[in-house]
Image (cartoon, rainbow, N blue to C red; front, side):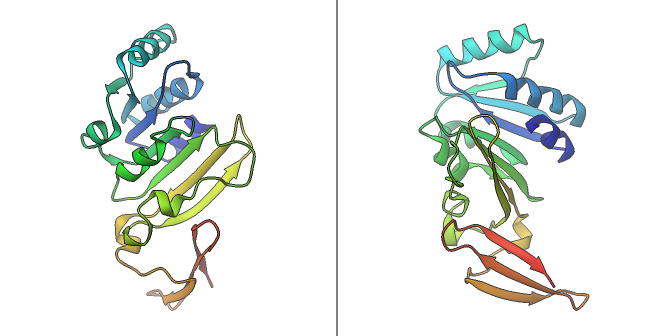
Amino acid sequence: MVSAMAAGWNAQVIVETWSQGGLIATSVGLAIARRHTGGRHVCIVPDERSRSEYAASMGEAGMLPEIMVGEPEEVMAELTGIDFLVVDSRRKDFPRVLRLAKLSNNGAVLLCKNTGFSLSSVKWWNLLGGHGSSRGVVRSVFLPVGKGLDMAHVSSSATTGGTSVNSQSSVRGNNGKRWIKHVDQRSGDVHYIRT
């Protein structure tokens, strides 16, 4: 499912996090999606042991993605234009990875796997920089797939650049249609509704 989303989004920069002992099914799917889109697939691992295990597992599957080792601050600084990002909530540094991600100007899809089966536990708005961010969450959804998958579609930087976040506000588009922006106070998710 994740690979189909990456391919359908035509992701050119696919980034994922992985750590030792993790499953590689998602990684294999992302590598296949990369082949279809002609983009780049990068896996971020915390240490050399994780890199070795990941490379061996992916090699057995016939895949050779780019692997970057290090702390999120070091690694994420080298990656720009990310339009598809998959993080594992079991990694303690996943919020930092999300905050530091240099997303594509055209928007991005963010996925957080292994979130559990409660209501959406990921507070996307807070993870993306809160009220100071020029990005907004267009839509987010939790799927009870695997061990829980939380997804968000993040707007392009031009869509929400510098707008203040109210509980509800509206803007008229060029064609006279009205857009209503609603922020869910519990989750921080931003929803745009066209009337």
